[in-house]
Every structure is written in structure tokens, then in C-alpha cells.
Length: 246
Ligand code: NAP
Image (cartoon, rainbow, N blue to C red; front, top):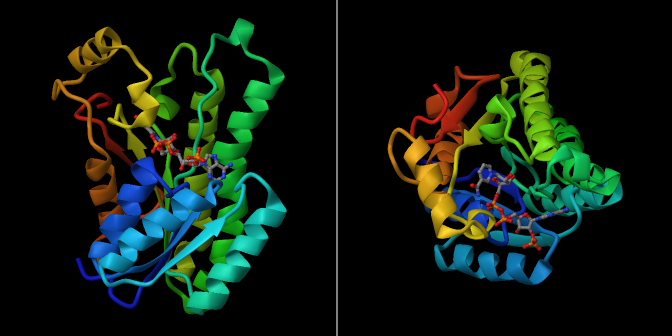
């Protein structure tokens, strides 16, 4: 897949799945903006992108805040002069059963996971509509499709992201802007490292492929949905989960 001359912005890409997505896009020839709330991690990832011979811009900001998002897009679109690919990846968890869930736990997760995607899509579609071309990939989760005890806030945010994806796909299809979501299952990252070995084994036993996925599995799917190989696909949710949801 050749993405040379394409420009991408990936949120929450200083580490974890976002970082893997950035490196995968850069390997395919894309210049990338690495956005993270932690500027130092964004700069570290930018160095790895530059080592691949691609242009990298490190930007910091809280993607749940409108002013930060506007400033971030101004910098990135100003530097790149265009934007072809947006990946809404930044996400957090504040897990607990609903009876113990505080309003602040609900608000934090909905703001970082869902409101951020609304704010970033709004900014990204402007240059994409002008160019009559663009790819938006929203990183949702299988729990947005099937729910998960202890994750009322997180599941609702990811289900909301899927609704946002389908709506924007309809609003922008005629302008050749594709909007799709990826729903990863259980992926080996800092987020799942918090689980005990016993919990990880229990999880793996529920997955038809009997193993957790890798960040690379998710990044490869993002690459597909960012490339011309998926030009006639929009409004879809691609599960990357070893067969967990089918
Ligand atoms: P992660 O390792 O925690 O990485 C998330 C990144 O987002 C971090 O770099 C984090 O910055 C950044 N971030 C957090 N809040 C932010 C904010 N307000 N503004 C900007 N950046 C922010 O998580 P991950 O496991 O790679 O997950 C990436 C995405 O995949 C998330 O949307 C997650 O919900 C989804 N997902 C993950 C799994 C899984 O099994 N891991 C499964 C399904 C879906 P800091 O480093 O400063 O915190």
C-alpha cells in the first residue's frame, strides 16, 4: 500500500496502539502528525518516524478540549497544507460497576473518547471536503458492540463513536470522504497489562483464536482503511478481535 504524499494526523499516538499506527502509516510513505496530551512521548515517536525518512510533527493538546483541537489542526494543516487521513485513537478507561461510578468518571471517559472524535472530525472534514477526498478512521472497541460489565462509561463512548462514524459516513460520502471504525478486541498494551495473568488467560479462552491481539494487528487494519484499497467502503465497523464478536 503506497501512501506517499499523504498526510495523516493520529490522536493519542505518543505510545500504545496510536504509536504503532503512526509507524505503520509512515512505513507506507505517509507524513504524520503525532498528537498526544504528553508532548515528550509525541516527540519521541516523531524521532522514530523521521528515522523512517518521513516528515513528522509532534503536537500536544487535550483532544477533549475544543480550543486545543482547533489549535492542533491549525498547526498541522498549516504545516502540511492538507490533511488526507485522521485517526481518532486517543482513549482512556475509568472502569467500575455503575453503582460505584462517579459522574466525573463518566464525563472524563465520554469527553476523551467521544467528544474528542466529534471535535477532531469537525476540523478534519474542512480540508478533506475541499480536496474531495479523505479517510477518517475511528478506533472504537468490541465493547461498544457487546457491552462489558464495569465499563458503562467506556462502552457507551465506543458505541457513540460507532453512531458518529455511520452518521458522518452518510454526511460526507458524496464528497469522497470515507468514515469507518475499527473495533479492536483485547489487544496487548499498557491498557490490558493492568490485568492479572489469570484474567488474561480467562480472556484468551473466550477468543476463538485463543490469544490477545497486537497493536500491529490494529495498525494493519488502519492502513487498509486509510488506503485506496478501501475506497468503496464507508460507514463500516471492522472488528479486529480474533473472532470474539461474530
Ligand atoms: P494507551 O496505551 O493508554 O494510549 C492512549 C494514548 O492516548 C496515550 O498516549 C495517552 O496519553 C493519550 N491520551 C489520553 N488522553 C488524552 C487526551 N485527553 N488528549 C490527547 N491524548 C490523550 O491506550 P491503547 O491501549 O493504545 O488504546 C488506544 C485506543 O484503542 C483507545 O481509544 C482504546 O480505547 C482503544 N482500544 C484499546 C484496546 C486494548 O485492548 N488496548 C481494545 C479496544 C480498543 P498519555 O500517555 O499521556 O496518557
